[in-house]
Image 1 (cartoon, helix red, strand yellow):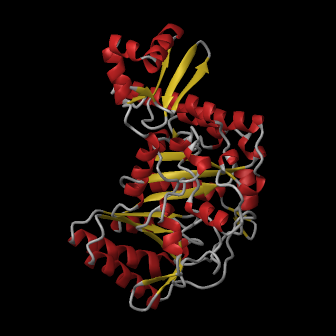
Image 2: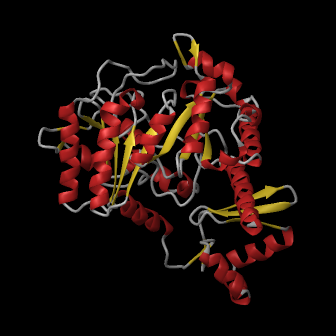
Image 3: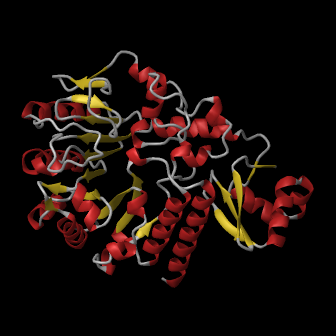
Length: 439
């Protein structure tokens, strides 16, 4: 057997962390144990002498069969996952927003989804069902601020699709990206009715920095949004919330264990913390990285679900949900997009929803996007970090194709280096294992 190309060994004080990017397996060993493992990885003779260890390493992909081509495995996995028959649809009921965050890439024209566009969307989904192309369906709400038109658009369309998929016994889920300002108890009851249980809500740092950025004509919003988060997790059954904290070097230096202390202990396990750099402030420093890791560790210690997995992951065959074929993002005006992190201009549009409920894709766009995996290039294929990175996302591939970006790799933009990621990931796995033992 041969050792995997994707094994990584990190010194961690007096121990070594052993990590494999294909399996995500991570463990720590003493120096003497490491010598034995390295011997088995490098010697067929040692493998025969240590059969149980050899089999364990093979089960966790540290060792691979001589005939296995790991690159081909990743390429094959990519095709399987990109073209699977789970369908994801994201809708913008509007691009209007009650906030005007300085870093937002969107324009906010007045207007919202018409009843005609809503009917086109219903026809589009009916067409997918008739073609027997859906094994499960995920409906997402984006914007703009989608809760501005909750009663007129979000609620009726969500209820419509829930009823259809429930009758067909097809698994259905609903999620929303919202600033959280308009959430109230009556709305939470309706969230429950339409199975809207997955949310992403953003805080812009601590109270002071948040209120400077997210306010309504000077009226602060931090305390209101934080209380709405508490209500959402307290009163909505099975609520799952991703709390995104946008940061700059100044903002990440704050102590988020203190900032998020008002969130009750009993709901913290429902909240996954995701730190995200404000993209206009890219250019991190060592101090910033240390602050980021400190906050991740501290928040994990006080009961929040927080990992560094948004910077790297493992066994990744594609970067983003938008890389998948069975996915569309429809704006309120019926124009179709893939990426939710670009403005809604004609340049970024990939198609348009027609009267009969079909998407008219731009000529050649699907072939260009899906003919081969995004990482099928020399730079990515030779990279040891490929299974933890997934290569460029579809939008980055389009940027390279259009001459906007020159390189496939955007790994240098990551806030956490691979060594720090593996250390934090190990601590997370270790803590989860200890919790299982306690239970």
